[in-house]
Length: 494
Image (cartoon, rainbow, N blue to C red):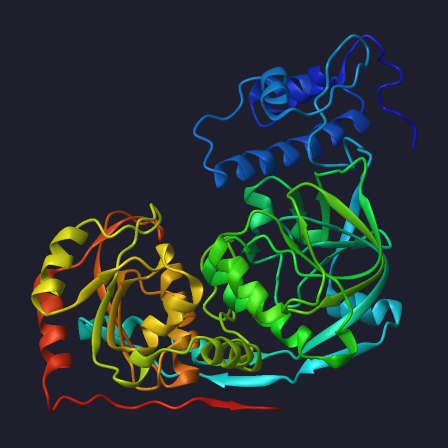
């Protein structure tokens, strides 16, 4: 394509970049009339790229947009290209500013496997999960809970063999044949990725293409391996439900007994303990750090067993699935419960309350709430400070557990059937409440949400729980003759 700037060597591209920010002002409209048509089209398209960048900056919660291209380039460390004595920051849009990696097709593992004609090995069949509407208090909040999430079809969990692939730490994206491969439950037009928040990738949803912004100049090489790196691996909830469930199904397959696996480096000790429990002592485990890569001659890639996105591009989609393959969760539960033997597990008479130290979704009046719980005989514990197997033994000995929503609540999947869970959450009813229901319900655990007043509209902001509401719920739960409706899992293959 002929360079539209060839006739204007004294004018740098940075000049047009700055002018493009004023495309819709009257001053620039007058200026555009004097320019050739190719440059007009270029400025309009460049303005659209700038709008995408501003939207991206807003999503990353950057308080002040960049003032100049020079400052933006310096702050974000983009490369500089000298052209006509002007500077040009290489922005995340290769069709305008080409980079070494370039733009690639963004494709699901299922479509890529079909495209390349690879064979798959099924680890777990498809399943249909039917979830009841969660119990809530105050009861009027239950009318606002959407029923669209109550029925979820989840794909089978399978292994695909991909030749000459590249993987990076801190992401489950896979690179092969000029494609970026994502999991089958990800819809790039609806959800944000953790990789976008961390500025690893730029997604172009309308064209199903993406630009990867990380490059390892000296990647390692392995002839064969299985990859289980994930952007959410360092979060306990995402690890147990999305990563460990896949590893458990993979390691249970005899054909993969000698295959080394790759996981993220920097995992919490409890996460490492759960990994050792599933993998055993005879399998090689390779820990891959963020922004580092491994080239694999034959990569065994396991499809997703469940997926919870980092966020939504517009508003929370009421039909977006937030559930997990029950066969994967069951495999993890059976293995961990068998290892966590405890003499206290038979009594099941403990009243336990979880403390949270996280700054995400904090319980603002937690000391007041904890005083109430202690008066009812609850024992306050902080699961994050306990070894993994001790956490499982603890929840299996519990009769009632009270906890703010958070990663610690993942342990309810290890509870004995019939255990009652009171989850403290903010009063924003959305599909996220089915996240914990999908973990509790398959194993006969009764979950009730006690809603509190949110600090602001942000779903991750702090909230306060009314102590009178807590008194009413506890009085009902602790009555000797009180009983609640028992629920059973409805899961079947189709």
